[in-house]
Image (cartoon, rainbow, N blue to C red; front, side):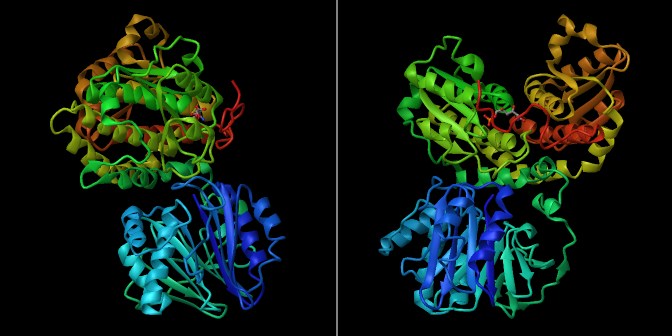
Length: 612
Ligand code: AGP
């Protein structure tokens, strides 16, 4: 996700801003910029696509921008390709205001149309620029920056952390936050705002944490905080005792753990802007209703966890669209003479957007004349650029090699796309459209309920880490979810594991079940719960140790026969995998932790596999 730093001090701001941005590189970014207020030149802004080195070069290490007041930003693109123009800070049309932003403005399009009608011109494709132009408009109306900020915050919807400077205010910067983190730092030579402690630890360990709805006015001498009615607030100061490396993970022990915890918010950010007035609104999907209706076949092509999303989708989409959905491993797809033609839609799912197997499959699909859609997390990545259409997950940068939040946001985005296509085809079963959207809206809170079981998962990890072979068994959506659970365990704990359709066990593999074999029995798919139960009895009869996963609805029945049970909330059947996967991610995490494995950088693995 984006990184923000701001400084109001008694020394040159630019070098401090650049240093702070370099401390936030771990957050992942694709462009960066700084803006400084100078007595000689007013507002000076410099920004560049790519790594921070480009910005250092552009500003000669900051020497080109003079002044003790400024803001800086590393951008993780969500709206608009990574390029110089879309990089932050964004500048108001009159050149007087510079703004940096972390978050997603959900109603930016309607505000932009409104401002365009007022004759305001835009230079970027971002949601953020809409905020600075709206701020410039209100500032011209009321003449007070603080009042103008208040008006803007009441108008926009979504998540934000803002840093704002104005050429008319030589000593003060303004900050505001809702949902995206922002801290205040109290330094010797001036005061700070920052997305996280890492950016300013070099200068101060005395910080305050802004809460949603708060606005701060920061000068070299003072930090004043207000609520949205501009009532002054007292902020408690805290002493940060982290070392820098711990701070980079936001205080969490591993990026993977942090990213597991980020899933509810990542899912909300991916879904919420795409449901407007009770209807799915897909940005970036270019097929017409006619073309969709002419589709004879849909392929979902991916690798690893992204492939597992496709397996979940097949069960869901064939029910919603009543069309054949083929799920293919990207590394197999182009060697299997796929039946792709102009009436085929080939969907490539990829977190990185750089996986070579998936890119090769995309090119093969296009060569065969198919329509292509990319579902990608990294904006502007190769797969995103080469597909006919791209719809982004908004999980933010995922640092851990083992994917979690990207997988979860892919799942829900594919649920949305399936609803959208099914609605165009008129094949969504009655009442399901509304029921699924309701379930998606409730999902973040239910995911948080799953995360409340961290201690139980830690206990189960310590109870079961010594097994050298684990089976994940389930039926239908539970089986599909088991594929991902098994990969998570293998990837980071190096334990051999296998996901198996539990109805298939008796056709051979059950011969491997013996006294003490650990079987994780997945029973969250209500329609087949009784079958799942019979498979638990089957493996128990052969001595298996059964760790079961089920929902509240079946807790009592499952706890009677399993050796241990994990319980998640009930939700719409197609959304159950989005909940069940969370404790299974935590299970893999705690088993790996017990085994002393390198959780964020497992042996032999890379975050993006750019080789065949
Ligand atoms: C997932 O935990 C793995 N790191 C890996 O299987 C990954 O999902 C696969 O390499 C695909 O990567 P992509 O989504 O970036 O294309």
